[in-house]
Amino acid sequence: MLRLLEDAEAGKIGRLFVYKYDRLGRSAETHAIVAQLEECGVEVISATEGKDSLARGVQLVVAEHYSRLLAENTRNGLLQRFEQGAWTGGPPPYGYQLVNDGDLTKLAIDDVEADIVRSVFRTYRTESIGSKALARCLRERGTATRKGRPWSYNSVMSILRNPIYIGKVIYNQRRFKLVKSTGRRVPQMKDAGEHVARQDEALRIISDEDFIAIQAKIKERGRSGSTLRVKKGNRPFTGLVFCAVCGSPCHARRSQNARGVYYYLVCGRRQRLGKDCCDSKASLREDRLIKKVTDTFMSMFQDTRAIIAEALPVARQMLRSETEETRRLQNEIGKCDRKMADLMKFVQDPEFAKAPEARKAVIREIGEVEARRELMQTQLVQLKNNPCQSPEGLVKAVSRALAEAKESWTNITVPSQMREFLGKFVGEMLLGEDGTIAPKKANSAEDSSSTECRLFRLVAGAGFEPATFGL
Image (cartoon, rainbow, N blue to C red; front, side, top):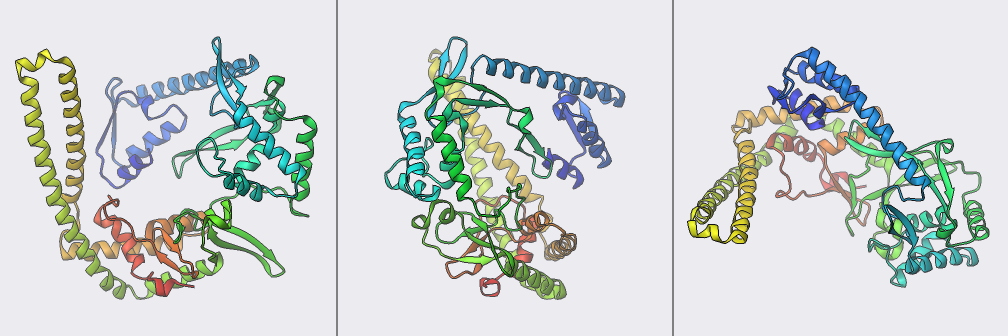
């Protein structure tokens, strides 16, 4: 949906056909989405309900009402199943498995995993060991999580804090909310008053006494004077800086001293799994990196001609690469056409109809070839529609990218906007062992964006050389 709106604003869509209007959504916001599309000059037409605005409004209201009733019935059904002792969805907690009990799917103790759970609780309670060290011990013993991943601080704490191990099952703890800026649904915890709990002694793995002692020890080991953590928003470099040694995303680690609070970018894998998982000891203060970003862009905006002159040669090389890619796609499409012709001869052969299994296999292969050809044809059309096919077009594209970067920069007021800006105009970066930051070289085969889109990053990249950006 986000991409649809972006294409509409860019003038790439003239008409939008849907089977029914409720395919666009069943919430009150669907009216606003349709209005936004029409403001961009897009004619919205339903194949079954026409394009009358009154009929559309009625259909969307009916769809919203139906969606609300469906959600309410679903919640009531899940609550009833929970009260009957059924598992209401999602993977079972570590230490349990799902079993069928008539028409219900219930939790049952997994003996192998339950032994590990008991060991985790017993070790944490009886020994002077923290959760990170406990995770390291589990890794050294060769014990893997259910998904085969190494144990970490979070996976250990998720066990130690979960009341399921004393047989207390809690339902309705969280809801999912759609984040419009990303199009993703993120979980949000509900108030404790909305939770529904039941006690099931058949699921007990540890005693109440052990669990209470563990919670007290976790609280005691918490930082003195600290308050409950609030939900953290994205830092300016979240998902953009990676460790040059192991390739893991870097995390912002909070540090506080007499002079104030600082955030340091460090290898996330090393921080999460321990020093033995990555050799990089590099750390970089976030505020210094922000200052470097600011200085670099301010310099770029003051000397736009030099930046454009520096970007143009690389842009021309990008165009030459696209010309080669165009030839390659044309050749591959030709191969697909010849393959399709050969396969169709088999299908049309009367003798071939006597072998139904072979016929199904050939028809399936025809579908795969058609899908591959359609994908390459779409890529070819995008390349041919590239507006930057001349030197004049390149100059305009680079100038436009620089102007957009400057406008976006002036509108930055919060960290999330800084992150969005860097993601668009700079891209991913690497944190070296010596604490320097360098642009992460993208794999050209993976970059399917148009030349004009890649020029946005090229403009910023012209001023972000490793020697300049190192700290």
